[in-house]
Image (cartoon, rainbow, N blue to C red; front, side):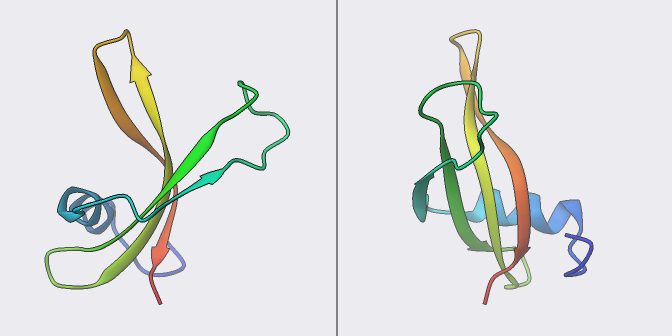
Length: 77
């Protein structure tokens, strides 16, 4: 985020404006908790139209809510 001059608000707006998950990829991390863990890619714009690429995972907490845990973000090409 810092390298691309993005604020937390830019990233939050982009995630909230997204209409769909762009892609699902299998995590390549050797230290992952489960045998099969997926990361989700969201490409969307913030409120001023700046395209932002985010990568995160969906986390379910106490069988009630799911949320998007942000791993990384940058300006989309």
